[in-house]
Length: 191
Image (cartoon, rainbow, N blue to C red; front, side):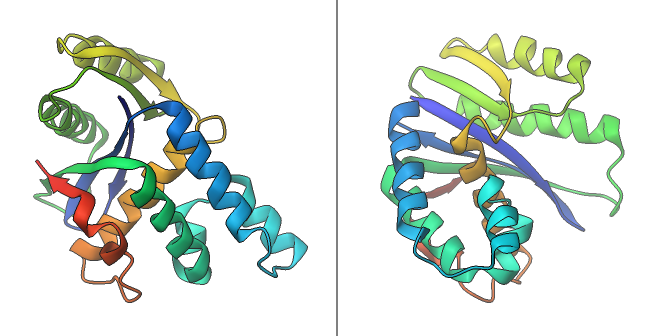
């Protein structure tokens, strides 16, 4: 099994969420299918470059509802589970040391809730010290067979995880006007 992990920060909560799937290959195949299914959409060249490069949630959530819907349907086809954990903030500003501590606790809760052997790819922070700490601490969990930071351009599963995070964030904040959450709700598990 493979687990792709990303995080999102909102006014009063911080979420770490993941896409758990059978294999990297199944996620890559779903991503290829997703890209093919939206290839016929009419977009201006500049929009295509912005959207298609990485399918970042902050771009497609507001302006490309059809693309987001199609992505979430592909996620629901390839995912075993969408799993997340949430930290309720004491203040709206989350200082870096508290954020890192919360991230480790939330990720640990997610990983410990999974009973199968897993490989983990988490979205890079470009902070080698913190990434090493993640690998060291989470790598001690017995059923973690590998854990590495990754770049979402190289790991389509991280693009899926980014969009899962934003979907959960929109749902929890009451701002999911397009009901994106409804497309993955049956897969979602909070720990």
